Image 1: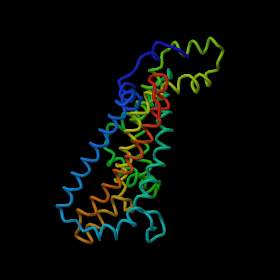
Image 2: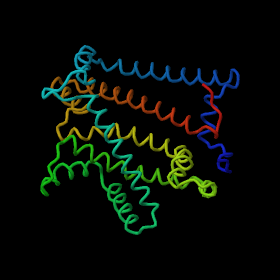
Image 3: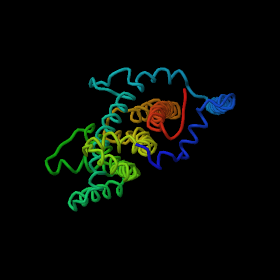
Image 4: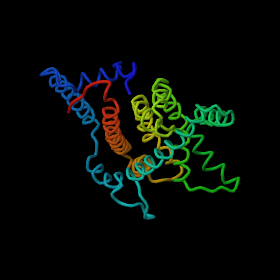
Length: 284
């Protein structure tokens, strides 16, 4: 539905339009200079790393294990594959809990509002590492025994859901009230209004910060290594101690995290383009 909000081009929209809109040679020239800058910086980074005298033979030997191409001794996922599993499952649970928390924050029910604000305050006000240890070590004292994998997923999910809830709430409240009133005047149901009117417009505001949070979650998944899970960070440290080549193993892990983060950034970028239609014109 048309509104004043849809006529406003956001700063993010202007940036994406500048980057992708085909205004003759200027857009192509801009993209070329961006890629040239990236290439130059990568060459400088590679040159700097070359002075460390890295043992690339060792990196090649351990890389398949760090990528998770081989199972751990107990037959479970390890390395990058375990990191991706933890992150993906945590993303799903975090999103579900965040939506419920955001709705509680917007609710006029004092109990729902109180529960949502208490939960968000606790998980945003305490360190993630403490939450991991509480779930893994404290719950067994109440008869609730969880594996390291389950504990890590729950800690990541609850922690990031507390932050993501505020992002979702901000996205929902950014949709002008007139949009809902116009839809109600047309006789649309509350569920249809939420799904077809509010959600698509809110997603434009939600996706950029939510994408950044999910990328941060990917890296924070390394905290589950304290529970003995053979994820990427755990293997990097273990191989570093065993071979006395910490630099090689840590740099390899850093490179893998970076590539995974870039992949998530590309997904975020595609979603921004999809839900940003109508605010700026973008052509492939």
